[in-house]
Image (tube, rainbow, N blue to C red):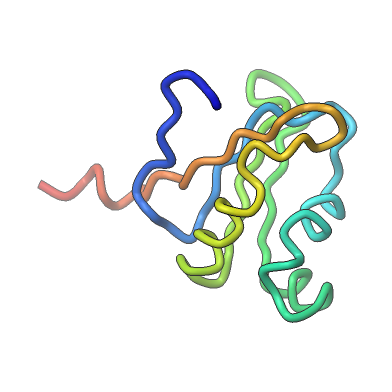
Length: 101
């Protein structure tokens, strides 16, 4: 679907790019809400960092309560045309992994 796409190593954080300019936090609760029991569970279970300015505009980091939740969300929403643009979703990099040697 996307040239050179790889989902990365499973993690509880998803990196999302190719977002439209007018995306808001509530949009993520609706897109990823189906991996939770309810919309309220999604609101309490997700941590969202949405970039709306500068070089990172159109990108977001969404933290899930578990790797399993993040895996289901990636499988569900990668490539989903949200507000007319397909979302590109990958697992976020684990900041501790690159320091281990």
